[in-house]
Amino acid sequence: MTVWSGGDWSGAGLPDGAMTELRAGVGEGLVVGGEPRGEILFGQPDPEKALALPELKWIQVTSAGYTRYDTDDFRERLKAKGAVLTNSSSVFDEPCAQHLLAFLLAFARQLPQAMVEQLGEREWSVARRRMDSRLLQEGRLLIVGYGAIARRLVELLAPFGMDVVAVRRKPTGDEAVPTYPIERLDALLAEADYVANILPANASTDGLFDAGRFARMKPGALFFNIGRGTTVDQDALVGALGRLSGAYLDVTDPEPLPKEHPLWTAPNVFVTPHTAGGHQGEEARLVRHFVANLRRFEAGEPLTDRVM
Image (cartoon, rainbow, N blue to C red; front, side, top):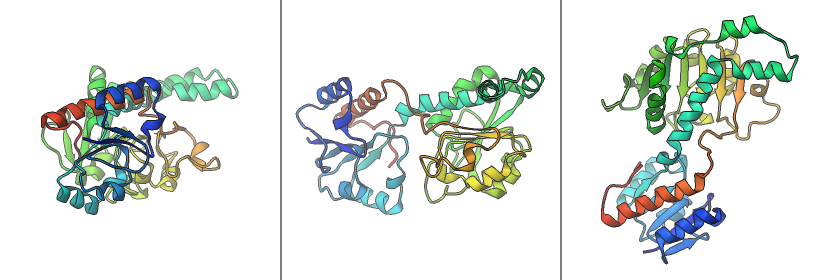
C-alpha cells in the first residue's frame, strides 16, 4: 500500500519529530512530495491529480476546510471511484474554539480597547472601560455553522451560563444547544448580542453576511469570524460599524489583508492573521490524527472526520 504526503502542505516540511512519527506510522509505503500517487493521499493534493489516480481509495486533508474539494463534480467523481475524503477537524476544533472564547472574553472585559489606550495616549479611562465591560451570561450568542468547532465552543462556554443558539444547513437533533435551519438566520440575528461565523467557503456561503444581514443584527451586537473571509461582504461590515459594537476577525478576503484596507483602522475591529487553528505541536497532532485514521482504514472501521 502506497501512502503519499505532499501538496501545498508538504510532509517534506515537517519537523523532525513529526516526520519520524509519520514514517513510523506508515512504514515503507510512504512517499513524500512530488506528484500524488498511490491509494492514500495525506496533505493537500491537487483535486484533479488525485481523481486521476486509478487506485485512489482515501484522501485526508491537513486542514479543517476543504473548499477546493467541495464541489458537486468532485463529490460525484470521488463517489464513483468508491473513495472517501476526510479532513482534520479533530486537530483544529480545540484551538479554534479556544480562539473564539478568547475573542468573547477579550471583548467582554475590554482587553484590546485597554491595550489600544496603553499603546496610544495612555488615558486612564476607568469609567468608560467599566461601563463597556460585559458578563457573558447576560448575552445571547448565535453560532452560524454548527460543526466540530461549535460543539467544542459550547462545551467551553458551559461554565459561563451563556445563552447559546445555532444555525446549520440541516440540524440533526443531537446538538447541545437549540439549533435551527439556516433559513432562520435572519430572524435570529435580530435577537443575538454576539454572532460567531464559523461557516466554510463554498458557493452557498459566499457573501452570506451582506449589508442586509448586518442591518438585521441587533444594535450594539458584536460580529466574530473564524470561518472564511469570503462569507462576509467586508465593505458592508465596515459600513455597519458604529451601529455594531465591533468585529473580531481571524479570516479576511483577501489574505493577507492589504495594509491599506479600512478594516485595519476601523473602530473596534481587531484582526488576527488566520491563526485560530494554530498551536504548538500542530504538525505532530496532524500526523497522529492521520496515523490513527490509517489504523481504522486498515481495520475496515469508519474513519474519523469523514466529509465525503
